[in-house]
Image 1 (spheres, rainbow, N blue to C red):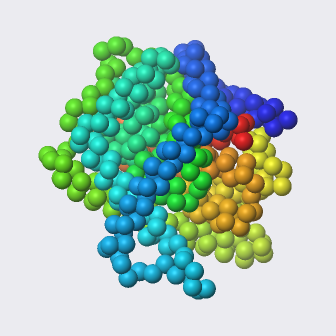
Image 2 (image 1 turned 135 degrees about the horizontal axis):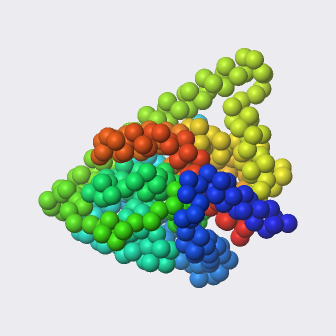
Length: 402
């Protein structure tokens, strides 16, 4: 029965995307079908085969080692900060154990970019996706690039091609940026959620963003307008300058995330305080939980956990993924949710699809091309809906195999 409801959810998501389409005659159904098959095969392979579990376990172990190396750097700079709870046991300090690890991951990404290793990997994976789906190279490259770099960085990487992007193409590249995550903060996610769900969510959400983008804003381009250039992708002049730039960028990201969390969590408590004044015991999360419970049901969430799952999903959309992940982490620690719910919700949360991302993407595009920045602002809400539908699609597919 769960499989039937899951398939209904997939059909519903694709149906909404079709109804939102601004050019239904030119929808690339073949490419969409290919990407759906890739999602299903990838998820089945990772969750239901020994080889897939070994691969994801090996990748997870690699990330764990990197996180531990990052913690050594944090411990050297802050040796006297003791992570000790009230009972004398070791306690986690979010800023130290999660956010500061971003600095090390950003440094690695910067070095790999300077050495031209990462750009070539991204380029050829993007070309492969373009070849099997029929999508333009720029859109495919940007989708892969968005898996490694943040929203702003991914869009800046294709700024030389912006003069070729009409509104539909601009929608797809923006959707890829919003539906993805940055590799520099994956380490932070892994510090809060089960590794296998975060890692499988990254490619799933990349394909989901392209699927919904291809439905909502179909594109056809001329060959001369479809080129990808990876030259001079790093501004660093030396290996050590790349390390320094990466460290500084990572530090900025860590502080930005910390500032946003303070603002969002405090604002959420303020809203809950206002709601409680009129309706005792009711919170915004509870309201969102009931609103999104039907969607959670179709996604495969067990009936007794629908409101909790819907609450986490809604919190992510109206605030950001970190706020929702922190709430999910506490539920995981308390064993309040089943493994299936944890997996589905974790995949849903692993993306930048939230209201604040509209401003980030519009601001980045505005800096590259003011006219196109105005276009992004106009379809900002449509962008958020499409990216959220993509997260639902990814989480539903994950739920089919859990």
